[in-house]
Length: 142
Image (cartoon, rainbow, N blue to C red):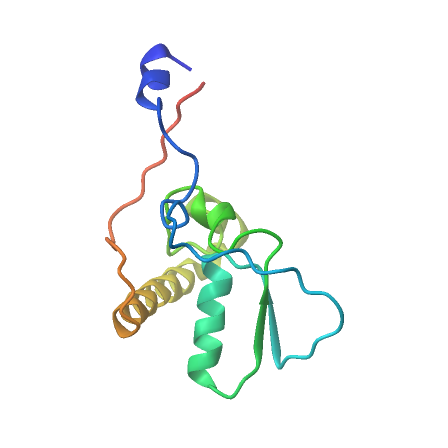
């Protein structure tokens, strides 16, 4: 890594800003013992949280349990600063390799998902600086 890149990252906290706040909720105790639920969601990243919201909106009486090994909205969802994408395959090259005949459908469904996500932010009064724009991959090493 070049010296200029190192300097650019000086003082950077590799921690989601929404959790780096005294008002952030505490991590809940681990689940001990048996429990029941209509739906169990494993993983409290953006995808798991979004699935829980959609399930409860679809059927408010549904008993939804979300389990997460660490902190909610922290792991892969938190590392990039909260980036979300239309891709369900971690990038167009991978989707092209695995589902070459389904790209149009996958991209349409991904865009519909982002539109629904943005509508939910407004509906629930969630303050988020959401901006739909392009995608860029940056390398800081060879």
